[in-house]
Length: 63
Image 1 (cartoon, one colour):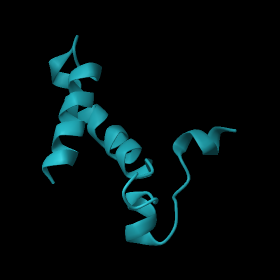
Image 2 (cartoon, helix red, strand yellow):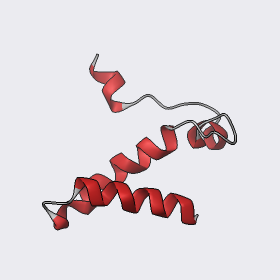
Image 3 (cartoon, one colour):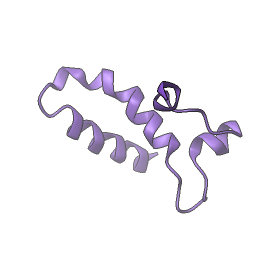
């Protein structure tokens, strides 16, 4: 949707400000972050609504 695109564009601009060619390396990370974020309107994450569960974060696997 347009809201998701605006969010991803804003986040990509923040992370690639120095190296414009690195956007593809960040996209999957930012997509995971967006899909893991609780929505105020639904009270659930996009992952939970689509998959029925919340996937573990790569950071959770380190600990």
